[in-house]
Image (cartoon, rainbow, N blue to C red; front, side, top):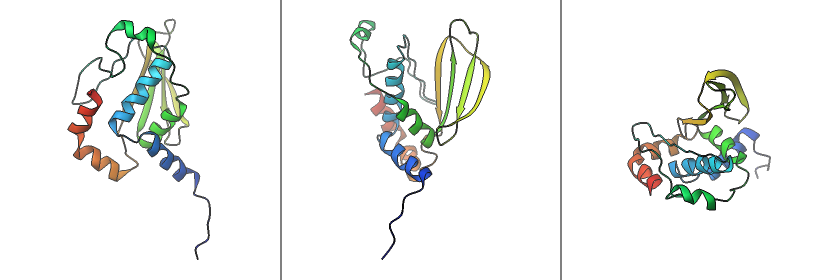
Length: 155
C-alpha cells in the first residue's frame, strides 16, 4: 500500500490556481476587472492581442452603473493564481509620479521577481501573457477554442 505524504508546495499552488482561474479566458478577465473595481478604477480598458474591442464588460452598461458597484473582496488570490498560470507584469504610476512609474514582474510562485522604473501614465496596467503556460492541456484547449472563449468574454 502506498504511503500518504504531502504534495509539494509548488504543485499545490498550481492545482489551486487552476481552480481560481477555472473558466479560461473569462475567468482571467473577470478577476482583472474585479481587481480594478476594488482599486476604485475610473477607467478600465481590456485589450486582446489579435482581438481588440475597448471598454467591454458584463458589469456595466453606463458610467452611472459605477455608483452601484460594491467591493468584490480580497483579490490577492486571483493575482497569485495568474502568476502560476501565465506571465504577469504590472506597471503603475500615481499622478505625482507620471510619466514615470514602476514595473513589477512576478515569478510563477507569485513572489516579486523584479521592480524597475518604467514610462507610465497615471494608473495601473496589468499585462497577462502566455495564459496556461504551466498547464499544457489547458493551453492546447484554449488555443483550439480561442474564438469561443473570446466570444464568452464579450457575452
